[in-house]
Image: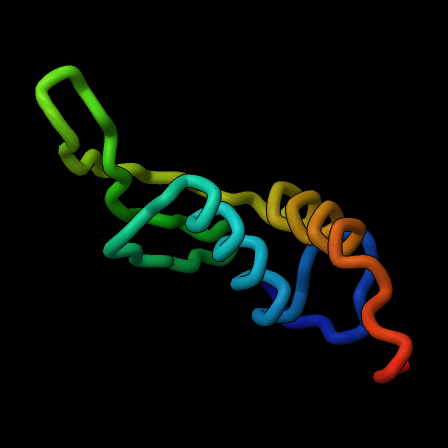
Amino acid sequence: MSDNSNGGDSGIYRYEDILRAIGRYIDEEGMQDVVVLQTDEEMNVHGYRNISPAGGIRPRLVNHTFTAEELKQIDDESRKRRGKGSRFWG
């Protein structure tokens, strides 16, 4: 994932946006003890999520690989939900 501050349609370029999208996934999945690894083409998230089998709650290892396209989609959806921000700052 290259760092390109001028934007574009090929993916997310700022770490701020990448980490926000990954953080949203982590929160939605209820993950804990998370490790994020970056390669040239993708971001890998490893962590534990509690599951509730009949015998009680136990942690399960979860691995998820994000492509640049998937991160861009999550970021776009989040921006729509957040709106344009406060009039106070704009």
